[in-house]
Image (cartoon, rainbow, N blue to C red; front, side, top):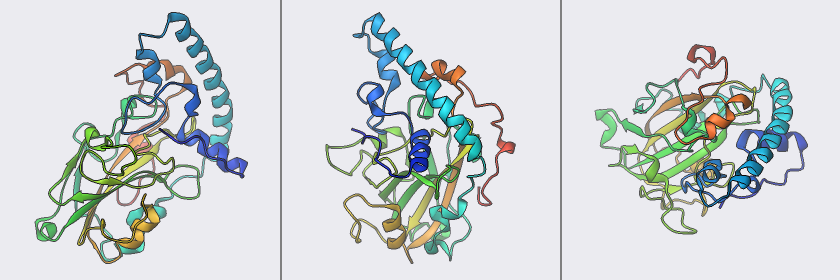
Length: 301
């Protein structure tokens, strides 16, 4: 299960974290999608064992909470409007990539389109929280040198000091050149090994994956799905039980063969679209102003 909201002494960071990463777990029922381990609003709406008046009570509470959060989030988003573009903190810009400054691995997301495409609400915190299908291929000249893949998902537009790590996955076999939502299901309680045959590391919430969920009014955020080919496996290296981004970055020094990325754009749905977004399969559309050309992009996007 997902960890409760962290106790943070700095009020500003707490509020930013709270808004950026979602509402408290206590608001709704048990998790339904093991790949993301988070609050599932759809579970409440889909559970036919709940009586009608329970639905009404939940909706009323949700509306009150949603309105309160919007009053907090929108002014805070306005104050933090310029707190974006922490691209220098992406893993692709750490020292291990000095000899490979440009992407050479082709990464595709067949469900969404080319890099820079919009991520549907279905794949966000307010939808079904699915991990997108990714496919990649290395240049023939270096493909034979790759012994393992690393996948890091980051949001550099969160109003925090550094990019938010949404997912960190290592030990991906060299022969595996695609992932889908099913690959991110856990294999056993307490195990870091996922159904896809690789391990997951630490993200900001201590879960397998954090779906997109930016602050209301903060505008579009970019989500970088970075695929890195390594010369040597990381499984036997000196990593913690739950590897962190810093540990991974330190362990891949001199091991990067090639890398690539797919970048998707997402904005938190406005409150008037929230009920639609909560329905399974619904896509409420982007927050006003969400256009590919309206978002500043990484020079490597």
